[in-house]
View 1 (cartoon, helix red, strand yellow):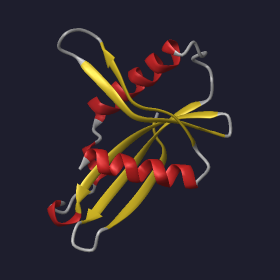
View 2 (cartoon, one colour):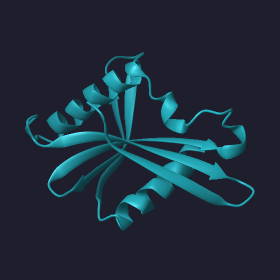
View 3 (cartoon, helix red, strand yellow):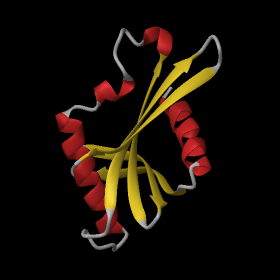
Length: 122
């Protein structure tokens, strides 16, 4: 379901004039710990790191996809964003933000509802 949500999100962002720079950036800190940023994009000279959360509407259990982004995940995303900037030799004071995109998929209707939470993590 995750890859499907990322595909939908990339199409959504492209329509909103975001330029997709990278997908599935993985950082290994050691043999046990690793992290991933789903999408790295750029719009209006701002680097946007996008965390995509996808669920099937029928299986939501009353929660929203973005509810799965807890404080530990937020800290990890900030570290990953800084790692991406360093890897790409960009200054850490460059304008950047972390967005969360929530995708709820209705498998019966074959439709998806997207909720874009801009600058959701600081």
